[in-house]
Image 1 (cartoon, rainbow, N blue to C red):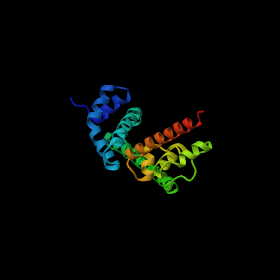
Image 2: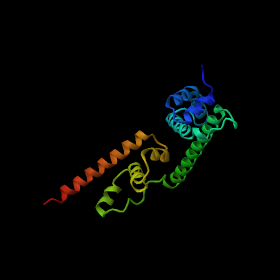
Image 3: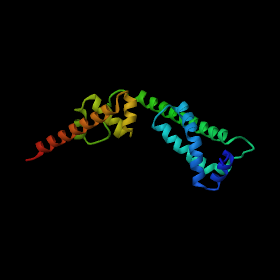
Image 4: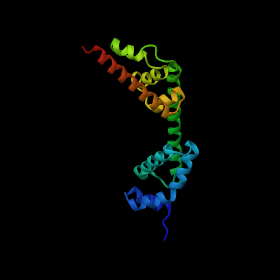
Length: 180
């Protein structure tokens, strides 16, 4: 005999892992479908699915059959978490746009360092100065730098690598010149 959704949820609330497996089999596709409608398909949607299922496991004791169906309760919780994630994403984009507006120009001054390193920094290309300044002075990730400068992440990695290599070469040259 097939258990009703309410019976399955009651077992989940008691910590029954098998019942949670039944629940996930019934509702994961619908939950994921709603997440994808709100966020779009991708790793973020998959991560949110895991978060929502974990929250359902933890909050299963709060489900009240007299208020609504298991499906309604599950999808309302999913909708709420999806909208929260969308707002968080928009907030992060807005923050990154504010950062980008102030940082599109190459750095005029490198991070506070000694005069020799400052001179070496000035020898870098504007592109290399920009990525190093965003990474080391402003603490942005490669993905955030890519978003800020509107370039691919791979380009950010290449520019950082080239800048560090150029600084290393300049340091080696300075050390070589300073030897007696």
